Amino acid sequence: MDAQVKEFLDKVASRNPHEPEFLQAVQEVAETIIPFIEETPKYKKTRILERMVEPERVVMFRVPWLNDQGDVEVNRGFRVQMNSAIGPYKGGLRFHPSVNLSILKFLAFEQVFKNSLTGLPMGGGKGGSDFDPKGKSDSEIMKFCQSFMTELYRHVGADIDVPAGDIGVGGREVGFLFGQYKRIKGEFTGVLTGKGISWGGSAIRPEATGYGVVYFAEDMLATRGETLQGKTVLVSGSGNVAQYTVERCIQAGAKVVTLSDSEGFIYDPAGIDNAKLAYLMDLKNEQRGRIKEYADKYNCEFFAGERPWKIKGDIAFPNATQNELDEEDARTLVRNGCICVAEGANMPSTPDAIHVFTEAKILYAPGKASNAGGVAVSGLEMSQNSLRISWSRNEVNSRLRDIMKEIHSICVKYGTEKDGYINYEKGANIGGFVKVADAMLAQGVV
Ligand code: NDP
Image (cartoon, rainbow, N blue to C red; front, side, top):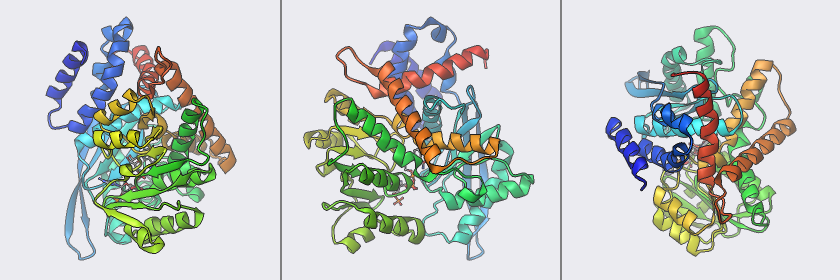
């Protein structure tokens, strides 16, 4: 590792002990950004990167609520307001028992670059709670969301900080959170995105991350004269991002053969068609069941406690969670002929896995570029709320398509290496950094 990078990372590590996910995200950025900063004195002198790794603000709070038995439960809530140089803080809320400050800081840090890449005026933030929605009744989910917002409302607002969904937070939770905000503040504003279509939501928002990551993969494949038509695709996860990745893959003529959840993965060699996808959406979004039930219903294999990367496929979409694809998985994918990995999840590939992809010179896109479609359409939802209008599905979808294309071009611009290989990670980091860094320079020492 470059001496300057090591010195920088040692300093960040000593200030943020016990935050491995945050340090991992910073390292991924520092390795490509520091050499760039070394050649750009205005960023070096003003210690822009040192400022960017320090959140502008972190809020941490108690979330007490009553379960269905009438017992008191206590969770911890967070909001990390990372950077507001180019717009109000923007980023999702995650409800999952693994949530802690390290995970939210990594997500908020990545969000700053991602939001910048969309070209829309959004700063970066992320929040959530260690609350586990699994097995909770609708009434418990509502009580938790109301208690969570009873504190969060002081820190957010349509021009301040605009949260959205993430793992464990979908349309139902956004509804309960929005209802409570409106009740406390007595105003109807675009304080959250991912709202229902009849109360300020945008068309295509549920689809946006999944469609966006597939659009991005199509642009990557086009650089090698390839398309999705006829390709075999591996998808992990079975939530929001995974579902709409499958939908768009089917539309593009590809065959998706895997899906997963935290208990294992299914392998359906015949491919997931529209009828199976409709079953999956009902299973996951309404029945709140497990992916194993898909294997039972369609009589295919379920691999308990495993991840899908050992299956042979041309393209992989890791769409579940961070660090779900390690070095060995990456080697297996490459050995099996995988030509493209586009991340729908945030930081699903470990640093060693990324090195395997880039050494093998296969197409690899980091989540901050390829999964930016979700926040991009959230940005469009904010615009529609401000204008008090709503655009059609076609209008939003075509804007999403254009934004993903533009992010791809930025990656090509900043990430193309001497031998012509496109290093999307480098391209996304530098492309995302420049806009935020220039705004910070213009605003003085803030
Ligand atoms: P959902 O809650 O809808 O689905 C999450 C999926 O990932 C579920 O299948 C879940 O399985 C699985 N999963 C979660 N945690 C783990 C774990 N620790 N190990 C294995 N599997 C796990 O979330 P989303 O689809 O919205 O989010 C998926 C990823 O995409 C996340 O990394 C998120 O940050 C990222 N993302 C989401 C965006 C959005 O718009 N929603 C935007 C950009 C990125 P189980 O049901 O068993 O928990």
